[in-house]
Image 1 (tube, rainbow, N blue to C red):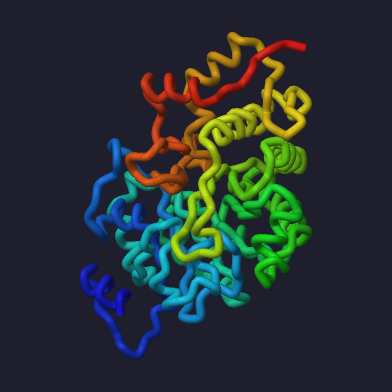
Image 2: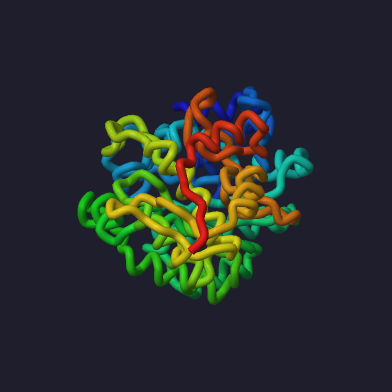
Length: 363
């Protein structure tokens, strides 16, 4: 069994009678395993990961069936061996992960514990957060599944040591959400329940709530910017992902969105989340493409030159900068970088300027 081999390579003592399930075991991203020196590897262009991403694991897998997800039940195969965001997520004992995080603490600015759609995942996430908090003072996020949660669970997570909540709504419109996450794929998730949970999370956590959105599921640029503005209006920031097909998923033959589309959404998200502009300062074509922004050329140039709008958007570390920088989660190393895991250089900014194709004017 793949997990057994990985655990043996890590030097962990195995007890055959135990199942490799949460809360005692977790899957961790390949990037996190590299950062914790559990697996060898180097990051393209010298990028560094600052957030240790952990994923709950059960032999029966996830009960959801999201069309673009590598963990969906329709993908088949051994769930514990399926990739997620196109890379392996090896399984390790939580105690081993915690020991490694203590050892390499200087490299870590945040830990994120991700649920899957199983009722028992709620209490197991609380348990995992508490065990990590007992050993580390590193900020901890939880990427939650609203379908199996209520407000009391959000409060219990906070009491256990979680300081930031992420909600992966992903789709920009109710119809797309239902098509790819709900009835369209015989999945359990509901648009209204997800947004209700976002509002409850804001009540419990204040502005420490992030909504994940995936650009490229069939929405227009206007659709995406409208939902970014909606999240901002109710007190949540937004974290952008660019769709990239997962092998053997229901959307494996779909293509990523054009880079120009993604760049325009990135700049709009930054302007809205930083409260510099709102959607009312933006013009769209009849087809819903972002055409122009009401901003001075000087201010726009300063923002683009900073490179920040085009870096990964995610939960912050104690220094206020994004800690969950997910190197190359949106593209393969060597391809055009969509979310920069580091500050873009001069050559990168020159390329970004060509990709934006956006008017700046005052009205």
